[in-house]
Image (tube, rainbow, N blue to C red; front, side):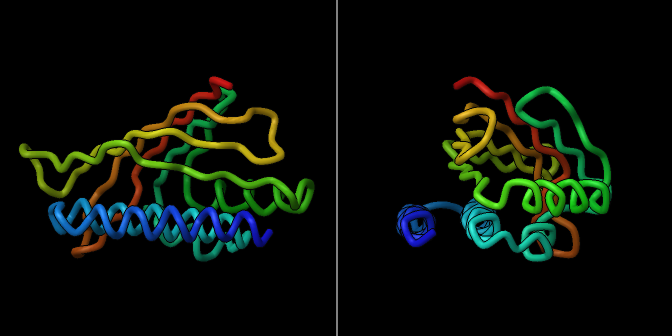
Length: 145
């Protein structure tokens, strides 16, 4: 657990340093992703879910999908009960704020699975800015490794 928290802290620090030259919205999304990774490491579903919209959609690495914040919270709770050593780290490679609609953003990157059916793969996320706060509308994970 200490090693995992050290990885999350290192990632958060790196993203914070890099974000100093980026737009404020890109920096906020990166900070939110780092905080959500930390919430995952701590198994804090309440904290993790604060980054999701109520109608959040998640397509998991194995191709199954979940719809709705409450449904997805329940699934995470069950996962950590059945396998408390499971965790995930999402590392953004690119975040783009829409020129068409600056309340939308696209994130893409890689994910790592820890004690899961897959070792990781690629992901993308759609972020929406509501009431000046960035939250995730949808995530798509593809298990590659």
